[in-house]
Image 1 (cartoon, helix red, strand yellow):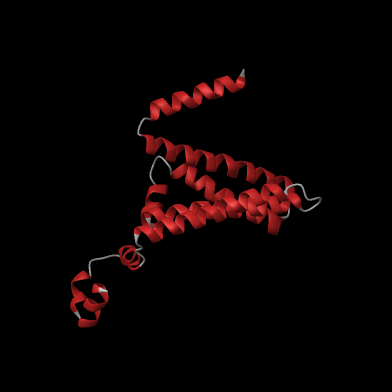
Image 2: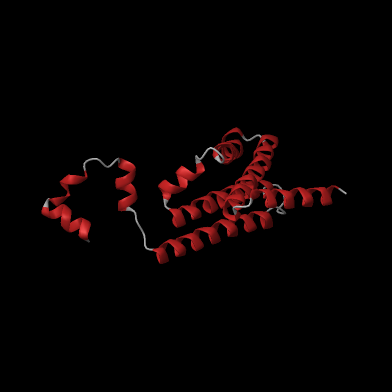
Length: 169
């Protein structure tokens, strides 16, 4: 409300040095409770679509296509859900960080190419390849988030290498 009062009274002229991302971020600020609600709703929709996609996998003839569409839409919703917690600008900056940039590019490219392969190109083998790459890229992004959150990358990497060696036996 203070921003509106400042704008209407003409006192906002001193903010000319802000760029468009800062203006957009300030205009779209949400309270913490609203952010958490948005995160939970968007994540629930994403997980629901992914689970629904797995359930639809067993429908004859169109089940695989429905799985691919719902799984991809679920991943997109899950990706957008984290934007509620951090805000879109901070989320994009973190996704473009040098440690996450490659995984982010691969994940977003696979999301787009999966939808292109299923709707426009209609090449089933290519669609399956992109879904598999999408799963791997999403898992890589989640692993990078886990590594960042735990602040102990060596222990987490040692744990996952131990788990992989146990699975190989």
